[in-house]
Length: 303
Ligand code: FDA
Image 1: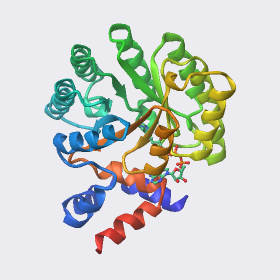
Image 2: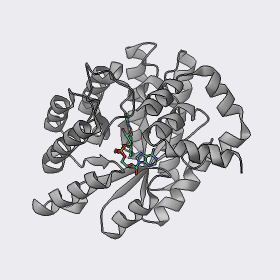
Image 3: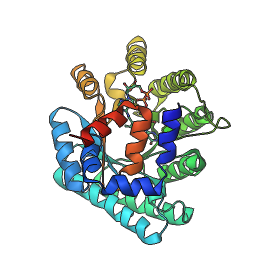
């Protein structure tokens, strides 16, 4: 818990970020979890995954921009990814972050950028999932996803099982028909809004997952936790739910053995492929989830 909290704290540290990002060796080690720094790297990784029967969610890394110009740049970069998917016919959709679109600058600016991306997604028939960030943004993210869904049906969002509010959010989103990716949650949250114990987060995950599998619109069960995955497989078997009515999702470079096993068993599997130069906070969150990854990065740094 101490290591996890420290890594999540350091994820915000500017100095460490500059050191890690500029260091050639840590940049190389980060490639285990990040496809590369440019869109072409992500397309290369996508093709390799598609060949193994795995679909992809492309994620341009970057969050919390402070300037309108940066938000415009991110909007254009997400659209470039959508157009490339449309043009090359790789089997992928995209994931976006509202703070990369300017949510910290102005919700109106962010919403305008979001709708521009969704129009592009609509034209190229590419689904867009809005990632869920720290709890300060949950209300705005859920509201923006719900409003956008009224205009564009190919938008979905993410719900985190560590938040107390998620049960209500899921019921509202499911009633409306919005597609949901269910995750445990990757940020450091206070006890006032989130469960702190893994057992509570997992218990809530299972309850929310059962709602989604029973009546959600093509939900995504995003986890590497074998107990959760076994529970999902058992639930759909026991309730006669089709394997094709939902998908499992995992992160690039994590539990590749389990990804392939589920594909062999006939389940849909989508892997979240991050790319871009702003990979530092993403890498720190992956290390916080599993401090053994810290050892991976450190030992690879000395090879
Ligand atoms: P848990 O953390 O309990 O881990 C279970 C087991 O999985 C571990 O024992 C280990 O074997 C393996 N494992 C988990 N994490 C690992 C890692 N980093 N490296 C190696 N092994 C690991 N979060 C969020 O807040 N907002 C979001 O939008 C998203 N989006 C998202 C998309 C997708 C496709 C996935 C898979 C995850 C996210 N997340 C996320 C992250 C999520 O909230 C969560 O932090 C991680 O998935 C880790 O939780 P698990 O469910 O895997 O379980």
